[in-house]
Length: 578
Ligand code: ADP
Image 1 (cartoon, protein in one colour):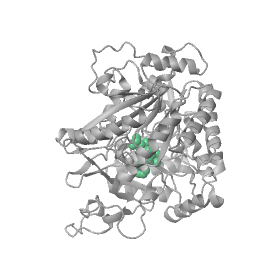
Image 2: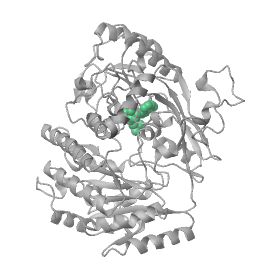
Image 3: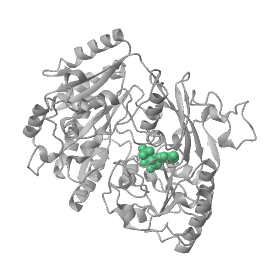
Image 4: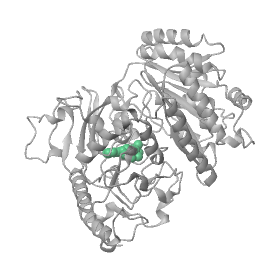
């Protein structure tokens, strides 16, 4: 239809008449061209189910109804001035915008907005250039639509992987910018993506353009008559984060204060050698001893990367017959024991018992806990590191050490072998198919790297999962001095009871955790308010500061209202409870 009389959206933006919305969309069409503006007008647009073709308008893994979190329209700017024009238009019309890069934020809400009827700003569709790969400085600058797979492919195609590696999350299809601003992690020594970002260009809520850190100092060779977003940046922008004065980059993470249009990310220099490994621990109770071994090794940097301690069911759920076998796996190899979904392991509807878990571990030749790590550097360096690592972990009775060559048909180990050297894949998607119509939510509390804390988090979260009728599926992701404990709540998205139990479970876990001093690092749209409220020290001092900054930078509350529990003055948060 012509943008002059665009269809009515399923949900209008708050306090916006259809007439006003049409007027707004007319002007949007003039800015981005009609082909880059889509009104979400019917259920036909809410049929996406696959990570490979994700929705840009709603949460494919919704736990309430899908209409609860849906955009009125999706708009894809082609360049920075168009982003600025859209932001200004939204201020004029007081219509909220929800920026995202690719919308593969699976388990946390995808591309869906927190306020239904917001206009989704699809930053990734047209703005997806790799702006620079600087081999000397070992960094890259990218636009929002550049995925980890894109950046990796670029290095391979330009014969640069001999020099530089990227760091990738479990799934490589998301964007470098989206994942980094959400403070997502990967598994090489550069696993903390936010720590490794350097240089941001942001469109602020008033439509103006800002560069962080050294980007504030003009490059003497830049053309002062060029528009700001095209001016050659300072040569140290991608090298030094802090610049001069207050360091503001952090307010643009998990944030509703700006739209990131360019970002620098440090790349890892090819270390000149690499060895991945798996250490299996046979007993559930071994978790305690293993975590006590991990702490000094990780903080002392003998464990050079972000290793993971995975529960047996996470591995079992990935071991599926699949066309998505990673590079390097021999498709003709004997994959007979590869299983996959829950049905292939049990007929019972009850959460798997310890005996059943032991049987699955035995069948897969894995432990109840499985530790995936890697060493980096030339052989003499690796040998010394591995000697220390084996010497420490193999003191646990029954622990076993394997390298990928030892287990050619262990799909998880073969995949981790790639992931831990920054080669992206989508194999880990498999575990979502544990249940029919599988969807997932992440519950992700931070834990001390300690046997007592890890075991307590495991016991409490497992008991609640089972109370809700789900199996515990989880992994401890070991950062420098803490662990991101990722509990994967897999539910059947077409079964209302399953969705309801998943919702109950995460709400209950948030409160259980807060009572023990455990807080989450990131969350799904539907529980952002609840988690924000748990960070309540000194009468919610964090929220009061966040609200003041929001009011100062975005007085009309245009960008991502409700994101991470921060509501502009215009909104009554109670009205938007989920
Ligand atoms: P991915 O790129 O991994 O698919 P998304 O595009 O789903 O991730 O983005 C996840 C979240 O990160 C969004 O909901 C939004 O809050 C934030 N985000 C992503 N890209 C941008 C951006 N360019 N500017 C500001 N925030 C962003």
